[in-house]
Image (tube, rainbow, N blue to C red):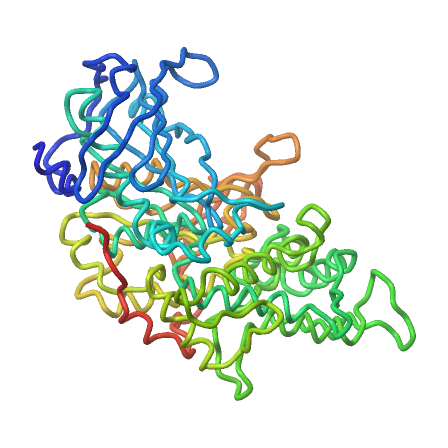
Length: 535
């Protein structure tokens, strides 16, 4: 068992275990974890380990350390509630901060999980540290940590420390992340298929280098010749209201959310201002053109798609900040910060010509040039056979109103993955599309989606998730709506009785026509560039 742990191949052994109902107590003192741990190809160093008394969280041993050369991690080990399960959280953007891990609420029947996070091997700076790329300019090891190494080596370190603390390795290991964390989840399933028994990949940035072309497009499509934003935040409520008036009813229920925005054909030209007018309740002709470009997504001069999707109708309220500059981000937008930092410091091999948001060209040549370094961090491989054969379970999810990563990109990937698989993909991988949900959290109607309990039931009991409940909270944090989300392509249909804010009053409904989600764009060749693997 010790050799199995140090190889990182814990999942296959874990699946021979049964889920625990009793707690596992530590066999050493928390402070005794302050030492070095050998793991394949490197070493982990615990620099602090201190007991934390029960309060807001359960009593636990808080462990801080790093994996060489500089991948910091924070691990929390429950002292009285641990039942043999480990959960590793992903990070967001370009990471660069060590966020304390949170304990999930998995119910009394599951108990406490050991949890961990990592900064992915660097420290971000600037007004939004998770968009900073300056650290990557001349540091290939740091680039590799973010691209493909950090989540894997932290999983090995955490499991080794868990074994030392409790006297045995975790029975089950899980990973959950959204955005970059979703990319990490897919990358782990593709390149390290024995690290985790179950993986949750939300709104995954797995088409990484193409996605940064997309972010550059968002910023440039909304920038006028004077360098100022064409579409401004004061126009978003009117635009969103017009979209909802046109499309909210198409799913059979007027409820403030669009169940499938692909069925919405609202043209922003319907909101064009009268000649000579310019007010928040309408759009100027230039703003109409900008909105159309945002919905369409990036193309080259010949109309070839550089990303498989664009902004979805219904996501407009979330464009402020991500697409439209705001003071909180230094009078920039998140799309602009992400794209500029990537193009200047991260997107091209060290020592080769780089680019910037101002200079990048939307051409197939530039797309290919970005794909060289991008292949290291893209999580686009369709070969998940080893993960599937090892018994791994994968839950993919995306909000239909995601303003940061277009949801149709996930559906493009899932259809291609299903074609590549040699049996029914739903036996081991399922997609859940959440109406109204924005990037990872927040939205109109529904504001949060957490599949962790469903994943545990699937891995440990073989209960495939046939519905997961999403929730909507108001400004005070009170739950004001629940709604079932069924495995794609099923959608939720109101049964005609009771509150439309109660999940109990909805049933699964098949799509009106067969889904065809694979998109004709220039990037499918990247599915065959799997990228490097750390020892």
